[in-house]
Image (tube, rainbow, N blue to C red; front, side, top):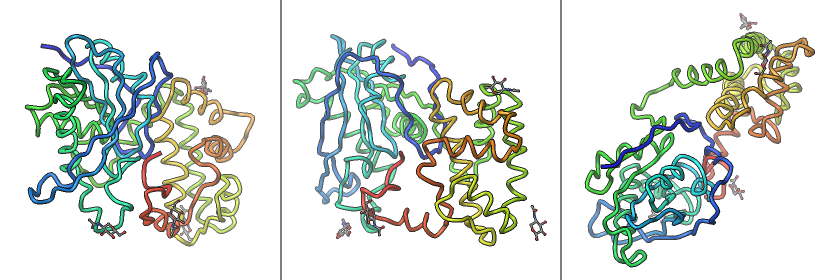
Length: 335
Ligand SMILES: *[C@@H]1O[C@H](CO)[C@@H](O)[C@H](O)[C@H]1NC(C)=O
Ligand SMILES: *[C@@H]1O[C@H](CO)[C@@H](O)[C@H](O)[C@H]1NC(C)=O
Ligand SMILES: *[C@@H]1O[C@H](CO)[C@@H](O)[C@H](O)[C@H]1NC(C)=O
Ligand SMILES: *[C@@H]1O[C@H](CO)[C@@H](O)[C@H](O)[C@H]1NC(C)=O
């Protein structure tokens, strides 16, 4: 019997950015592969398939031939996670073949030419889990490298939504998956989610200090007052380099500014953090040579690459961007 190491990866639930892989430690480049999986796993007469993408690193696949699968979520997969990180370390420990699977409708795993509404009925976690099951059965079959993984034990590693997938896989397909490691996988769908930002604040307190957190709080207090007037909103627009002037009289625009400009930036700082990122942000937020707390916040926010080239504050524009059904649209995957 083998078990999963409990290691902590920098990952929380629900954020929009793919976690960045750590610095590469593998000496090998992974192989990109494709497997035809069923479009609709739950309708026997629907025999359509689509190509699902994966990366494969066989650096550690030893005689025992176990499998570690890093599960992809709502983003395009990248080679980095088969060359370093938790799943990589686990594969090394287990002498396992390492795979990174791509979720249908994301990255290059596109069942259709676009994501128009009728096509979205095929985008569900049940279909995505069934994709994974079919993928694992294929990798363990004689069709993959002459059946070298025929008797493999299978461990899944997933982060955020993909952590949810790893958990449900173990429950829904216990005969296919032997162990699952879920890092911050949300299991309870919940409207609003204050616990998320509480964890973000805790991480900033731990790594950046209480003063840093207090400085953010003071800046936010002043910002809320500023955006309540046209003159203040204009000042904020300049400080934070919004794409167009923020409209104080449009509550949804003000909310969009706080959500995309501020909240998501801090969420990304914590969830996608590399060691040193939070202290570096706090150096700006603590900078007493800048008298205004709001200006300090602006100095940090505008330096974060997430907000380049400018902060979009128009709610209608954000909605229009999300309605774009092209797979190449900026909002079609997490970045
Ligand atoms: C997918 O959407 C396109 C429209 O963009 C449509 O032509 C096609 O029939 C849809 N496919 C399915 C299976 O609904
Ligand atoms: C915003 O402005 C309105 C009317 O000018 C005022 O009643 C309200 O107290 C202000 N809110 C804040 C947070 O300043
Ligand atoms: C400001 O942030 C830096 C980096 O986290 C930290 O070293 C420093 O102690 C903070 N300054 C204060 C006054 O807390
Ligand atoms: C949707 O996104 C694609 C790819 O970025 C872009 O070419 C297209 O112009 C966008 N469509 C609309 C309606 O904005």
